[in-house]
Length: 291
Image 1 (spheres, rainbow, N blue to C red):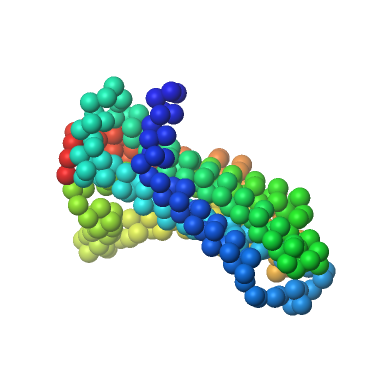
Image 2: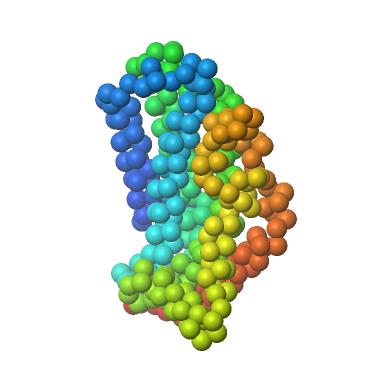
């Protein structure tokens, strides 16, 4: 455990963007709350101020979530490649640290550490913005941002997303690590070309579209599998704030579907494929030293 702790610290030291990017986003949102001149208090129905407050907090989380997803993918694609490009891999291979531990530490950074950093940043930012809005707009609007149940729902939603997306999209993360460990240049291009070539060859020579269907189902299948009765982000957003387009309110507690997610064969097939790709990345790491 000590080895992994030091490896994770190394990733934080060498990749300052892990905390700089959420800090920049937090600063920008805070400045917008402080100096923005948009007054929408008169446009809100008093009976729906709690729902509006929850929706605002959810939107702040979406900003951090979108940035986190992009950066995590880029980090996993670049982490092993960068070590070979600047030849620092030669130094790290001279230390008594296995390639397995190194790759797993980078995977853990991309799937857990980075999301947790963004989670903390999003939480602190929304608390600060809620305070600023409360001061600027008064209790009529600011009070809508201080409902404990809405805050608790958002915390649970964040943690649920961190765990379930890491599991569901593990094949894609494993593929990014394989490309990062193998490619000598143009890692972004090599991420796209092999799947695209396989898709086109299957279509041209076999007339089928199994590869395209499999990729699409993995990309689009997360929400229907992880959330009960919904397949779109709009419905998820509505559920977070406590009401839907239908008259019947629905909260995050009613939306989460961990039983179906963790009991689905698709989930665990994806885990097996992701584990195989991670193993391949480790093997490539063992055999390659520089670009």
